[in-house]
Length: 182
Image (cartoon, rainbow, N blue to C red; front, side, top):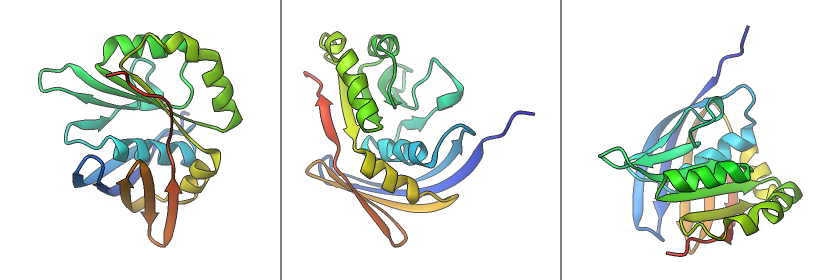
């Protein structure tokens, strides 16, 4: 019998001084049986970094043709495609063709560096692609904050991120490996 997803209830308060976005989102997040706490928290962080009233979590790991997070316009066009981890060159290429803006949040230390070395030359033609890396230390600490019911506060200022849950605080410094050219 297949394992079921674990449901996490998240109250996410975002204070993004860089984008002047201040909002609280009540999220119900399904954690796939193969998903780690670290990946779940990276997914929530990616949501916070791109928070918008039309931003949505997708089915994620259980579907191949959807990102982890997306934002669609009122007419159904894909405005933002957010992928986590180390997607293949093919997936990156297809994503850039489907959405106005694509952001890949990668993590995993040396493994992420090797992935980027392998695909970076084939991504230069995509003006709508951003690749942002999180350090292994930061994502490991984020994973330790995970619990089934969370009140997260995410503060963003000058590109630096502070994530707090209860008494736990993690400072995350996103490293932009590729920025959009527009």
